[in-house]
Length: 105
Image 1: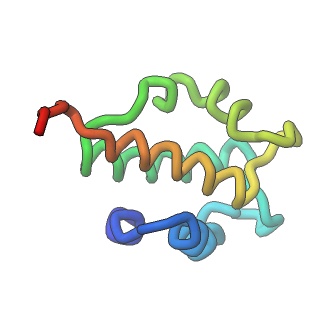
Image 2: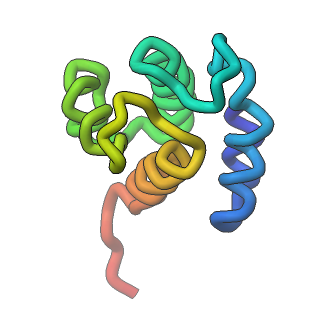
Image 3: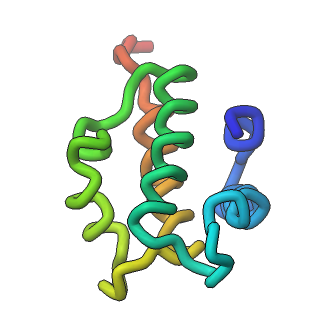
């Protein structure tokens, strides 16, 4: 998973990667992730980011999972679809890419 996302350059790359991983997490093959399935996806993704970058907003830690899930579930249907997950992943990736220190040029 880490290698896949570290090579993502744009939105299309993120969507392609999420599509390729989706069946590993969509255990009931209904095309969306319920809370249990989404939690596993997020645990794996955040473990990868923390290992690589060591920084993710505290808003997105697992203690805030219910708040996160409600925020990401834009259509409020109780599940996360691929588009919603891609938007969340892009948000996390942007946060992880922010420099830890600003060095004036």
